Image (cartoon, rainbow, N blue to C red):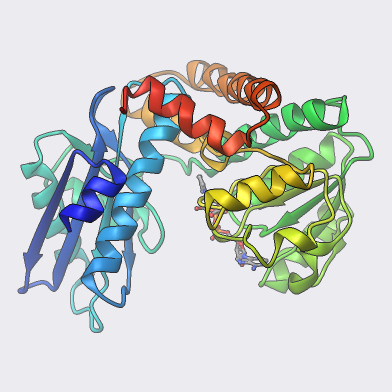
Length: 340
Ligand code: NAD
């Protein structure tokens, strides 16, 4: 466990076990140097405890990097609750989790993530104020989509010489909470959409609303396009998929798109510009963080413009240093966080 912590340079790791409600949870705090660590809470079945800890540590580090590059006064953390095989009382489990969060005295603020809902956050909120994305708040996905849209413009300018999206072929993998509103914005800007989703009804909706072209899920990554926007699950960019890509750039919302940093070098070698995921998808975090501290909608929207500026900076360094934007973004975040 300590080796895992050292590997991800985490500040602290907290655990709770409450057999009465079936709660086994880990909170990984990567850094509180810039402010309290904000990050979602996953509720998933894990094969073992080490995998849960590893997931929390890696995700917490990404949250720190995301927050610092978005210019937010926040650190990075993540919670993972190991989903029990049988769940008797969901709200009791999340209430117990809320009591645990309260013991961390504000060093960690939790939020919705894979497997959790705003109703779960309502249960957490009965015992702590260090929670966001309750049912009283709006879904931040729209802000994520707005940020990704701005990031696609910046990426098109850097790679193709123009941020005019008219006629640009954008392939979107996943038409969920982020992918669908992103498609809406791209369509309004004149882009030609190629879309896939495991759920065919979402594809049908995009065909009807935006004249999108349906692509089979297994064919999307190798479909010729200008920009590939992964908006489904993580690790879509790996040793198998990268040689098949037929795009000029990858710029999408999914977290953890790269299976490893070596894959980023492979993309660079193929001349495919990669928008680091935690930079381009930070719109939702910006929304959640600023709303939690009481900022207005106008301030939140204005803050989103930092995404494009940060990407421009990353691409400029990448070109000058001939290193992948993923490595540049990591190095920039580490410098800002004073990681040795
Ligand atoms: P979602 O669950 O609402 O949508 C994901 C969609 O992708 C679903 O419709 C699913 O059917 C589809 N999908 C999954 N695998 C696919 C595949 N192989 N091929 C085609 N379609 C596939 O999730 P979301 O909230 O839209 O988030 C999308 C991604 O963006 C996730 O990786 C998430 O972690 C990341 N992200 C989301 C936010 C946010 O604000 N929601 C913020 C930052 C990052």
